[in-house]
Length: 210
Image (cartoon, rainbow, N blue to C red):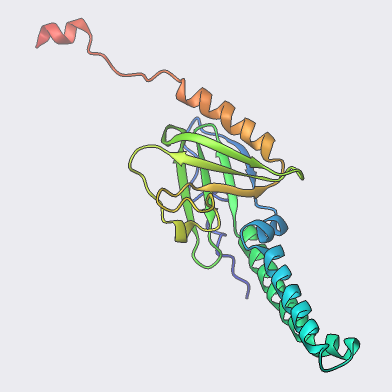
């Protein structure tokens, strides 16, 4: 019998129903291949095994013909292919388990393949949002947080700005149409932060009665 760990979500990507007046402006997921390239260093790992293969071929040609040396050294290419396949599978699972959400009041990240958790970041917590845009249109939007709120870099990885460990910056990693999403966030945050704060003021009659 199949089991869906996220079937209990009242709204996809969110642990509870939206409060009155809050609405979803955008939802999305990382591009899994871009996530493999950027967060799991897919190309660097593949290149490392290619270099090992070429080095082994050069060394082996001192004692055997080139074709035989290449065949004898092909183990590194096979091993590299297996490792890269595992990295791509990891990125695919991570991407499919992730839901990024933007509402008119906050951004939320449902992350984690084995251990799922949801980060809720009200716009009033966010001091700045930094966009790292690629030529393909995919990009990462990292959120600099104000105040004393802290998140674990390890628990949030790979949904963080790389190498910002002392003060972790949660991030929408490797999302398609990142520039469009960044504009949605900027407009929503500006509107939310500029909303007037209403407070109840005692009327004169109540004060006089006291």
